[in-house]
Length: 194
Image 1 (cartoon, rainbow, N blue to C red):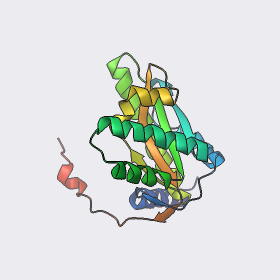
Image 2: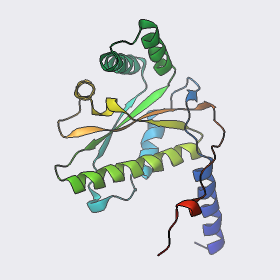
Image 3: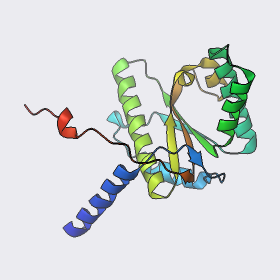
Image 4: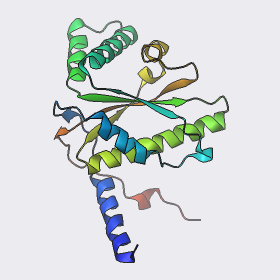
């Protein structure tokens, strides 16, 4: 590839990285699973020590699937926050109901701590690749985490094995609104040369 094309591609990549935003307001149309699969086929080329490919994915975008997910997540919220009012619980369910699709990223937890850390890092790299590919296609995502990722009842509801857990719950869809760019600390303030 000629060097000028490489420079152009690098600047496009740089622009995608710098412009990507976490999207929380979506249009109602779900992203077709074929598009998700296509992006994952490229995203899987993330750095992955020993090429363990510890990941698998559950895409929830059907009305039935979303209803199951919402009820499962609501039950978890009620269990983890017993004083949650019915009104707050309903608001939580309504918020989830406005998300057109959920990509549940599952990874195998190796018994070896170092391998487990490597696998989580690889899965996180895949997720970042996915988010950048999605942004390039006009698809928005927000990476969700929290205690729900570790809950065994939630794991069972989605068929996770004993040696698996969620790396992320990614809300996905076509953006209805994109937030403004947040100021970032200049990297020179976090850079040491020795």
